[in-house]
Length: 431
Image 1 (cartoon, one colour):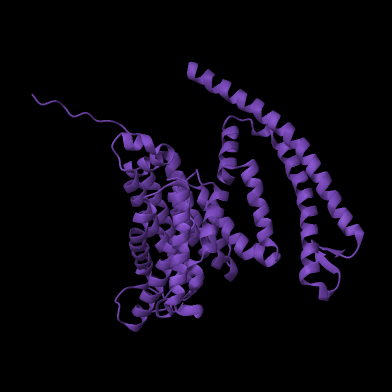
Image 2: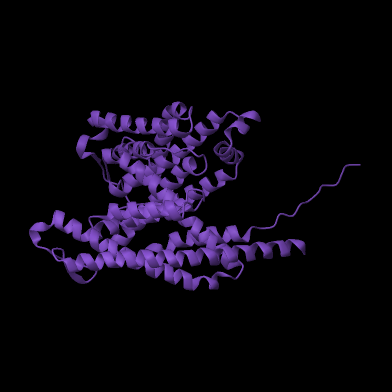
């Protein structure tokens, strides 16, 4: 007599479906809320940045591989995509514009496979140095091949190819945004699914304890290499989308500055969390577009933010969000709102003082011919007078001193709340 089949009920993960539904909804309605041309361009760049930062985090956060040359794979994807777009426009390549990013993905995968086998033989600092050297080598090589890279002028193209299909020509920015949004959602879902596969779990194990992984019979080199090539594929897709968006690709897409941006903003968003690079990509576009327009010293401000995040929140913005969500889940967040207001107020005072000094220094160095006066935050400051410098210094000293006092009180309150949460968890487990 055959044994009856056993049926196991697997509950539906409502929370996960809700998160992905909200993510899709946000991608869908964002350009309807922010309708200006600048806003839609920024949203498009955010979608491309999300794919690129998530691809980079496959190495940094999930595999523990610090790469200084990941722009090579997004950049090569951009170059191959722009050439494919030109071929499609000339009629020598029968490929619709919507599939051109896949050309970039394949290019990124192939280049990552060729360069990654050597790079992933080592881990840690040697891996970082190898990727830095490979990145500089490819960047220099691209400039030596103007037939491929277009020299200093780059390679330009036209994304409007052939007759519109269902009214879609990819001429308007809104149509390019929705193309990027579709790729962003699919690539994000695919990279999240990869973290739940045996390869993704083994990649985490290689990051945490490579010796034990080798002891149980896995080749850590091949695990790193497979993750490297997959990361190159998604980075190439981001590069292909960037080529369609800007319609021009030059050597800057291969420069170490772009690799550094991926590293910096992935870390700021939170490399140890899957959604951290999404936050980092949004910040990357905001800083690169808006903050750079507000002040010439935006890189200095960005460096200061990075410094304070390393000192006080090494887990990035994602860790801050999750820690406070945990506190809110136990109904204790209301005990901290006064501390948060005090921390925000004192930090803002110190920031205004520091920003005032920085802007006055930049004004005296770069705009001295315009006179000593400058406009900052609605006020006219005289960079030649002592009162402005004294007031800015006083704001910094008072703000920092009060911030430190409030921070100590906050740390004490946070510790008490964490103890209460642990007691509540033990009480629930005992029931």
